[in-house]
Length: 252
Image (tube, rainbow, N blue to C red):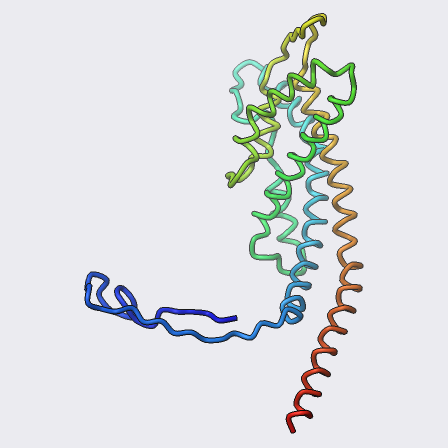
């Protein structure tokens, strides 16, 4: 691969960027890229991330088992005289659990561990919302609930899931659903039905735990994939080495 780099010119190498008489000069040099060598360096990173993701998915499942208890406990405490309204509908404990996990583990975490965890947490939540929509769509008894949740999702997906998001948006999505009061919905030709966002939040949390379990299995399979990949890698590198040695012999 040929790489071009600016050697000198306006605003480069100490030269003034406002001098119109300076001519830009570029230098080109070749870089020899060996794909097998890159793969050799990528596999350990992939292995580490898969191990961390498996641990992080354990945290997701643990958090899922505590959210609704925290929600009902908070509702109960807010009903007591003199209590104040909390900013969140439940205690946000996922990051604290991750921090404790990192503190007690023997191996050093990857540089972007907390960011990766938040992305994984958000992806699990997003996937569970999609799964719930499919379940509601496929059950004729849930037609009203499907239409309501579809509208809720479409109105909030860009706010909580699309693009670059701040930390903790997965919990914010669940929080927004828990804050939404029940609604009476009437579709054409149907009787009015009540839609309970609390029940939908519980289903999303339950589905998220199931998804986390499936993804944990996929993360455990990475090390088995690497056995096959390392075999292919060794064969590729040996073949290249033999080819190079034969080329040198021909030149001699």
